[in-house]
Image (tube, rainbow, N blue to C red; front, side):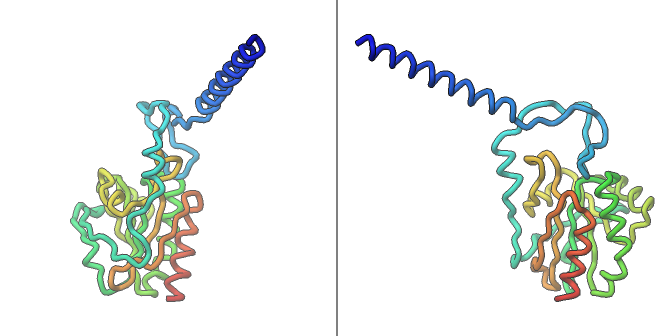
Length: 216
C-alpha cells in the first residue's frame, strides 16, 4: 500500500506541475495591444492613449479570418458618403469593372503608399475601363484632406462604424486588432472576380489588380 500511495502522490504532483506549466505558457503568449500612443510600424494601425493591454478572445480571432463575400458572388450593394459628403452607391458603377479596395486608415504609411500607387496607375485602370474606389472607416473630412494632399483622382468612401467592411466580411489582421487591407475586382455585372489580401505589401494590390484586368 505504501508503494501505491507514493505512486499516487508522484502522479498528482506531476499532473499539477504540467497544468501549471501549461497555464504559464498560455499567459506568456497571449496577444496584447501596446499602449504607446503613436503611429505603429504596422502599416495602417493607429494606436490611441486609451488602448488597453487586454488579451483578445478566440471570438475576435474567428471573426478576423472568415469572409462573407467570395469569388463568383454578387457584391453586396451599399451607399456611403464620398470625400465631398455626397452619397455614392455601388450599383451606379454597374456596366463597367470596379476595383474596390478596403484599407485601414488615411495618412498611415502603408495606406498612403497604396493610395499613391493607385493614383500613379489610375490612367492604366481607366484604359482597362475600370473605376477605383477606396473605403476606410475615416469620415468624409479626413478623406477630403487625404485626397487633396496626395491629389488622388478617384473616389474615397467613408465607412464609419465599419458596417460595409463587416457586411463584406473583410478579414482583419493581428487577431482582428488591425483592419484588413483587401481588394476586390468586380466585373461589369457586379460579380466578384478577384479577391486580393496583403496587409504589409500595399503596392502589390495595384500590380495584382492591373494584371488581372489586363488578362480579363
